[in-house]
Image (tube, rainbow, N blue to C red; front, side, top):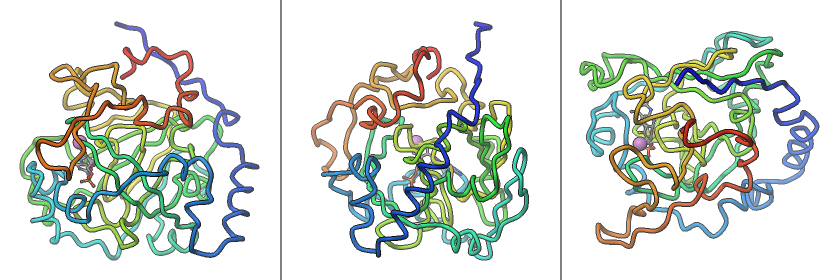
Length: 301
Ligand SMILES: Nc1nc2c(c(=O)[nH]1)N[C@H]1C(S)=C(S)[C@@H](COP(=O)(O)O)O[C@H]1N2
Ligand SMILES: [Mo]
């Protein structure tokens, strides 16, 4: 069990700057409508998906800082102050600092992306997100050579987060991605849903969305990103490493120790709605499988 897969990424493994610039030039040449429909792979991955209702997306939530029940975040998260908001970007970056959220927004290209969302508890939703690519934010700060991972942290503010009085998790909530996962064009920093700003219960003002990973990787209300060369701690992995790995890729072939991950229950169709088979990488296999070439996904779950 001492074997660990080591990350030997170099900057050549992440999205090449030329592809990034090209995408930005395309975006700049288009106005609002139809934007998402023309952004290639990301839009194709969301094609034909029927979004869940606003009600489903905003009332069936996981945000333990506001309670562990699915309805607790929508009942309690109104107490969170989300403005002003700043995001610290530090570690192995050229321009570390505390960035004001509105200044970040003014630099970013906001797009709509309709993504499948798959929870480890075997329910799923389809959510129309608004946001910008995490790669754009990382490029803004300038990732230094040698950085291999991004660590994320949620706000920890007990006075506004009633759930943090219980030590169900080791606060603040933390997550991590490998740098190539973070730079992947499907990886979104969401700032809204259904074209509206993010409701607090969904992680206002800024949360991560990685559509090929289980929902718990989608860390909410982010206040810090740290570029590092070590695999960062992740809250669910710390709480229960036997059940939650660092990678957390949606994988119908690797069961959660207490239940199968082979199928899912789409929310919104009623309790007795037909389960449907879960797709490898949540249906984004074509776009992301290459990130894991040569890795044993039963070991790195
Ligand atoms: N800070 C924080 N982020 C979090 C969580 C949490 O408890 N705290 N729960 C995670 C889990 S388990 C899921 S399934 C998703 C749920 O996102 P949603 O409520 O917008 O559907 O948020 C994730 N991000
Ligand atoms: Mo979850």
